[in-house]
Amino acid sequence: KTKTKLIQSFMALAPKFLCQVLGNRDALITLEFYYDYACPYSKRSFDRIVKEVFPYFEENHPGKLQIIFKNQIQGWHPSSIYMHESSLAMVQMKPDSFYEFSQILFDHQEEFFDSKTDNKTRNQIYDEISELASQIEGVDKEEFKGYLTLNDQGYNKVYIDMKYVIKIGRQNSIHVSPTVLVNGLIDNNISSSWSLEQYVEHLSPILD
Figure (cartoon, rainbow, N blue to C red):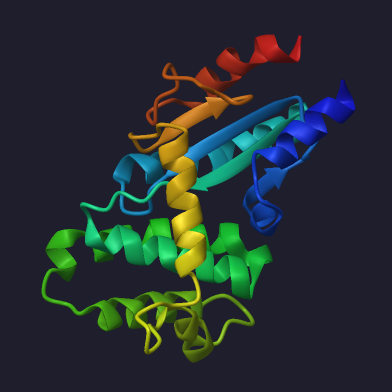
């Protein structure tokens, strides 16, 4: 049973994206969150999970819960694309800082709302996001921006990864952000407004 669970966990995520896993990869409960960095509901959910739910389970049920972050690009918000590109740049450049950078992106998401960026160029937005990335120890702004800047063919270094994460969402018919999967199944009962207590009540039967 344990071996099967481990294999299922790895099958759900390409090896290069293992930095998007938080917690024990052989956990009894796997929560996958399809998040959009430009979505206020995703931010609310992410904050609750990272700051409250995951720490609670680590303290009270150590090793029983893993979190998987899935990129859910909502293309009708142009800056959503650039924010997700930057998170995938961090996956390539400094994978251990993925969650730290995701927190930074969510904390600054209002700066990238459509109303704040409608008069900015793509490169200006890349520059602002790269400045945020440089807050992380060991991340050079210009080096980071190099992952995002387009080459002569019109591609950047995260182009292939962007196509991959978009295909994953489409393949699994994910539309809303956030969408939550519990052990591989979409759970529409879970809301971005849920409290820690609601998560504990909902997930406790799986621990029995």
